[in-house]
Amino acid sequence: MEQPTKTKNAMSKRVIAIIITAIAVIAIAAGVALAVHRHHATSQLTEAKTACAQAADRLRVAQNNYNALINGDAYKSAVKITAKQVEDSKVVTTLAKDSEDEAPKMVACNVDDKTALEHNTGLIDKNTTWYETHTKTIDTDVKNVVKARDTKTLKDTQAALAKKITDAKKLYDSSNGKVKDNKTRDALKKQLDAADKLKDSKDVKKIKDAQTALDKAMKTVNNSVKAKSEADKKAAEEQARKEAEAQAAAAAQAQQQYVAPQQSYTPTYTAPQYTAPAAPQYTAPQQTTPQYTAPQQTAPKPAAPAAPSTGGNTGGGPVSGGHGCNEGNCSSTPDLGYIPR
Figure 1: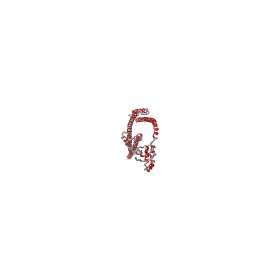
Figure 2 (figure 1 turned 90 degrees about the vertical axis):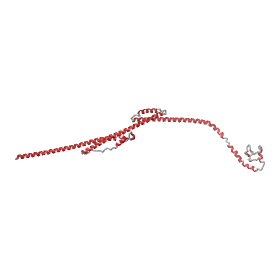
Figure 3 (figure 1 turned 180 degrees about the vertical axis):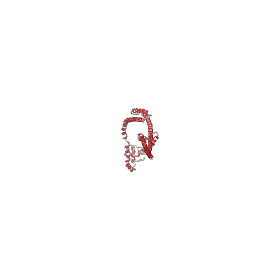
Figure 4 (figure 1 turned 60 degrees about the vertical axis):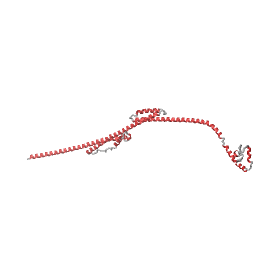
């Protein structure tokens, strides 16, 4: 009877040992599983952080490229170009419109959640795409504006040179024989030949230099023309002055020869004026008026009128003038009035 009891006890111990072992194995397995899970989660979080950091690095590069473009001289120069300076104003409008787009907001990787990190990484990648796209777009816009400006500048410069060449040729032809120094025309002709070779050039600087050289040569010719004109005018004025002086001298000499007799004759003509003796001849009889009243008072005497008839007047008429005197100086003879026959 003791043997079965021993067997039961042994079996019970074995079962307990198995159970304990099983529990231990389960516990170990659970611990391992938990450790594995934790390791996997940590690994995923690390990977998410790494991915976000890498995305942020790409964004930073894209931002730097974008900022370098809009802060660069090419962009700053392009945005100052107006529609009047380009051949096609649309390129200026396009650049202005693209430059107005706002940059996206910043997104960080400073989160400890895998899902949040993945979300932020997606936003960062999207922002990177915006910067990269706008960098290319604005760079193209800038190049289009600059190209349009350069094209118009070239055409305008070529047209200006062509006009300058035309003006210079006219000046060269019209100044022939009118310059003080003909070397100025030779220099102008030299610059004309050089400008003709550059009128179709694509080098704006060379075209402008040729135009500047023509301007300088034309100015020299114009100054030479002006100098000769002034010299000719001065010579003409000097010649006119000399001729006027010669004419004045000749006229003065001729006047002296003609005026001398007039000066000697003038006094002989004005001296014997008749008006001097005329006054006393008329006033003298008026002064004898009182002598006329005395004979009128003695009018009854018949012998008074017979005295003048013995002076040679044989006629019976009145004495000439009615004054009783017809010859000699009658100023002292009294006025007897009218004597009847």
